[in-house]
Image (cartoon, rainbow, N blue to C red; front, side, top):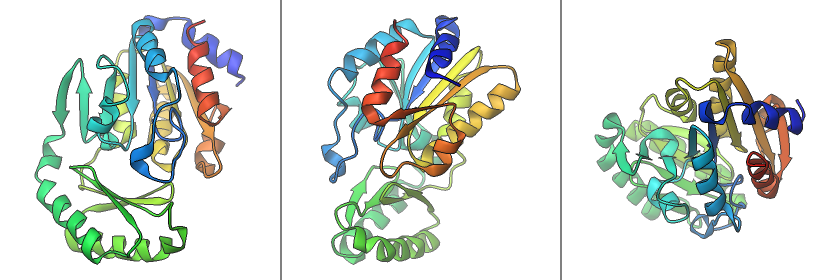
Length: 252
């Protein structure tokens, strides 16, 4: 599918179209230190315009809602920690099953800082945590071994991501469940992402397509983009700049 065809499909009935977008590697360049991530210039205003133009516009990210909220307009719908928390119509929500795991996540995050491989960055997100090895890629194997053992001890689930390892409560939620729930009643759905964690969203679009919904899967090409995601995409764009250009073209 060409970008022109994809854009035409999504513009045909904007009020019945849902646009879902990842954050890191999609709207924001990948950075060495996770807290330094910022959306490209003009992205907040673009998201505000997209929200006004389409039936649903939402960010779906592994980031916390608190982090995302600092970088986008208050009106933009947010789904953080792969769906464990959200901000919809200005109302903050948490998955009820995840709240019971907060103390466990706290304990594992503390252990990661004190007993984990020295040099691995620990990002405590409240209801989940991430171990980052982008600054020290030579520690990837040690971080994986530590995270695997921590998951076994704690009951948290281990998920791989770009140069990082994520530990989540064992709750049946991911980017795909978010997309399917929020796309209910829409006649067209688009997802834009770049990482392994976006695969469930692409799978959700495949299921929606089987039900007759118009779908567009956009993969963002970066040096460490998910090969599976690239292979499953309808459209490929070059880096966050390409993703932003695609989204901006929806408004033309």
